[in-house]
Length: 258
Image (cartoon, rainbow, N blue to C red; front, side, top):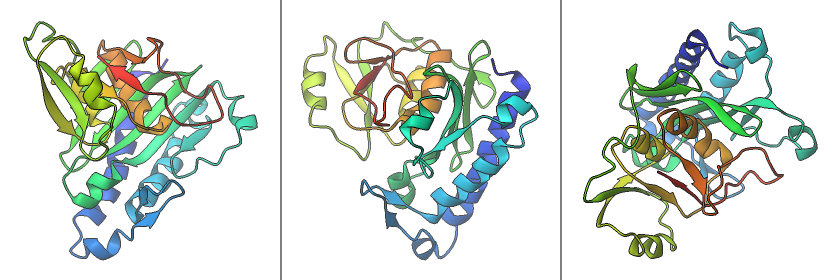
């Protein structure tokens, strides 16, 4: 189980990565410096993704807790770990150095640094840092969930007559409308980018986040930890807990956060 001091160290690492991202984001030659490349799945990759990745990779090995520092790392920018090796991992770091790269390129501020600690398929701890707004979400099993050091909790407005439903700002899903049509309450949409969607449910700014489109495990893990510690549920459409590192593919099934 993560200690408070270790969680603070993770927050500091996320801030350092966020500072590197913002140096590029705020640069006068931003359009040139983002140097957008296409990954294998055609999602964008920028200099900011790579800079944040290198910082997190190095800083995690310097954690005060030597056992945590020695854990294997799986990052979106270094995901080519063979399943034969990865399936042996019981505990590891799962990282998305810059989630919401499309939002970063659009310059709307809705992008995050994500670091999660996974143990036996479940997110034990996570930090989600939005550097454009200097907003830090952090959580660990047994320690609670926080936004900028203030305790947050889910489901504080569960009796509201209208459901606030978080939707992706950049990834519309054809299955979403069918799901919304079947809701038994009126709803209003709350558009948001990156892993901040799960965090909105964690802090009771939204009731529901149905993800009926593709995501990878690094996209969700850190915010998943925040949501769980805040009292929310993150379930597959079959009603099972969303799990990590259970198969060769790193794609998540569709899921619901509530």
